[in-house]
Image 1 (cartoon, rainbow, N blue to C red):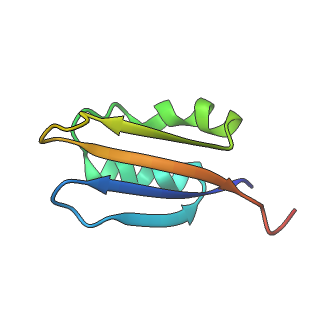
Image 2 (image 1 turned 90 degrees about the horizontal axis):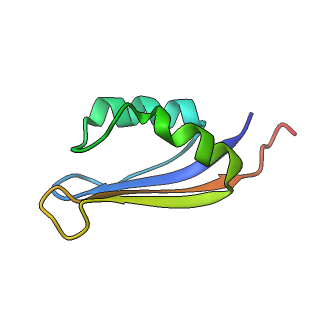
Length: 77
């Protein structure tokens, strides 16, 4: 199972840093209900094929938030 180290930063909220699967990251995004977020499944295909990446919503605006991720080695592989 592939794991990712990821960080969510949003204005007025505590930074979230975790190492989980994509599915667990989806769960966190659903709970946070960040502005401009479609169902978090949009991350799945890009992230599974990319070793790292980032996304920023509303750069410089009041609703700015960002997500960064990096694939980490699977300790069970």
